[in-house]
Amino acid sequence: MRPTHRPPLLRKSDGFRRQKLMVLPESLLMEAAASPVTSGLYVTDIGYFHEAEHHYRDRPEGCDSHILMYCTEGSGWYELEQGKTCKVQPGNLIILPAHVPHIYGANTEEPWSIYWFHLRGEHAHAYIESLISQQITTMPPAKAQRWLELFHECYGALETGYSLQTMTFASQIIGYMQGLLAYGSYASATDNGVMTSKQAAEYSVQYMLEHLESGVTLKELAAHARLSVPHYSQVFKQVTGHSPIDYFLRLKIQHSCRYLDFTDWTIKQISSELGFSDPYYFSRLFSKMMGQSPTDYRNQSKG
Image 1 (cartoon, rainbow, N blue to C red):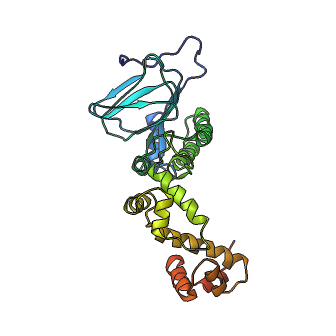
Image 2 (cartoon, one colour; image 1 turned 135 degrees about the vertical axis):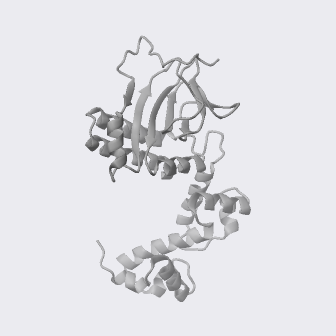
Image 3 (cartoon, rainbow, N blue to C red; image 1 turned 180 degrees about the horizontal axis):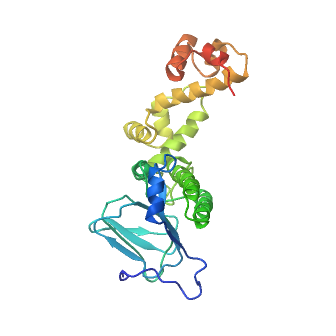
């Protein structure tokens, strides 16, 4: 049963201390939008609702900011497409792009507790699209702990006063939080044992790292990810932007830089160590990826 359209109510036992809510003034948001440091990504609203009874929003025109919510307790639901309701449980993320019609609310019997914020900025859409394209809808517990620590740090900074200085600090934290979601490791599978595209790609990259000194085939990589070769290739490129073999070669070249930096091995020795039978092919590949020859890279001043 859906609640009526009312603000979230506080349970009597909770009081006000556990609730958080901050709507930043428009004048400060204009400053943030004009500043080169914060114009890319900044918070407009931020908060935490504990056991938010009657929490319900219906925005036929969407919101002028992107919205991200994270459920820690209880349950709720949301709709982005007419008639398609998505259930929300602890550990779930809700990502609502700006100007997209949506409805959401807490379940009446077991209302959710959610951390949330609204985002604007020149790059905000890119952050949100990255999360959507990777189908990130949950956070593993280990990552959630760090993410929530950052949330409290961000809220604490904004709580110290309405100033561009606090907005700048909060903007950097929010960027980190978004990056943690989009690019941080998701090592474990989902509860039903089925890996998402992102998890499958990360699982495969770990396998590549363990076999840098040998060769792997596309068929072997697909089998390790438990996917067909066409599906695996599509999924991997969607997540990383590169084909699996191209990515594997890039890892080899990246690893070769360590040998060039910290050993006196010859180019032939390094290429052989990394499974290249032809040192000239290795050198050409290195030059293509790094923009300079292995020798020039080794002779370059670093640090």
